[in-house]
Length: 206
Image (cartoon, rainbow, N blue to C red; front, side):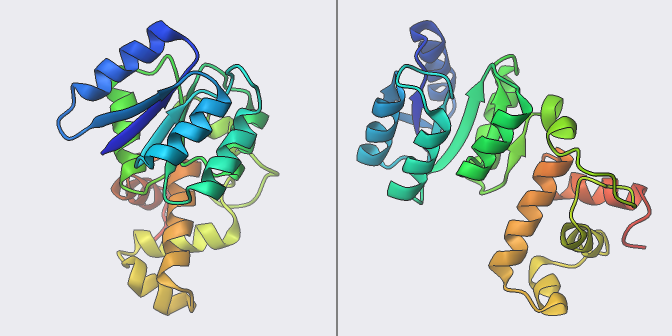
């Protein structure tokens, strides 16, 4: 796993780099200290993941995510920041971030988030997940999910694979994968099995 670390605080950046490099098969291929260098370093090195703060010199962290995703669409972005403002989280996710973790997370939580994003899963800090995806109240056990997402979750809970769900609903497998990622993100679930367990506990999939 090749990673770029973008953070304007030298001590934090150095500590994060050391943490990542302590993990087998993880290589830090670049560092950045502002939004401009984050974008250019990511485009130049083409890592698997860029771990970046949103508030760095140069401003426009969300816009930087959009530019990175546009110029290097295969690179995944994991936001690691101290800011948990709901609107900012939503903006970062809409811009293309695959994960959003707060800096007070433990080393284990950060590494778990990195692994999830590398596995093309979406991950959101549990501390903000419920607030961010609180929506206009809807009926059902998971009001933060759209009707289609609830439909996908119900079929996951019934034991269907993504391929089987795609056939059942007349969707592409890629579309189903995207829905599954959204479901995991909105539930704050670390993996598919956790989402399925919660759905079954709520009576779905029976």
